[in-house]
Figure 1: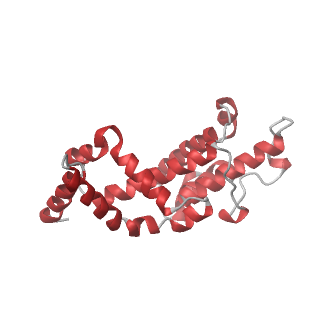
Figure 2: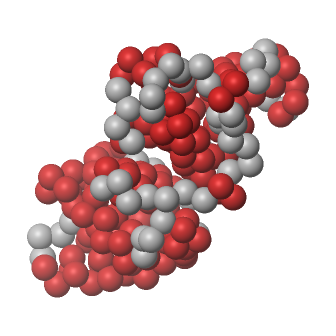
Length: 210
């Protein structure tokens, strides 16, 4: 990215946080127009989970304007590519929308949303509890959400944790380094924990199962 592009983007961000209401309003209209293609990238995901483009736009606006535009002000200090930054913001907002819906206990995930069930039957699920069926359903739902959010994390999580393949074997299969596999697995386990927390499972159960 050349200096002129960087300067243009920084000037645009400055207009987004301008104290002049007219300048600020025009800049935010431009932002919504410029980011429409990014939002459209998530159209299928939003449809699957009963969210709309308007939901994502509204949440992104609120996310960026929190705490007196703190995130935009931080970008001016630390950021470089505003387009790259906005892609990351949209991912974060997407996750927020998902977790909000999870907490409302309204989310239904289709069996076709991921390739493998994490827990397929009673034989490989030995948690002794009257709610075994419920726990298995929740774990499969959590895994499907991980798959939708990051299929590579989900695939590596499945191969390492459930198929018990060594990191070296997984690395060879996927054309990655062993270090890459271990890092991605760690992130996948962290994300599974976040999803399971949103689904209401307790810490003791998650330590035993993820």
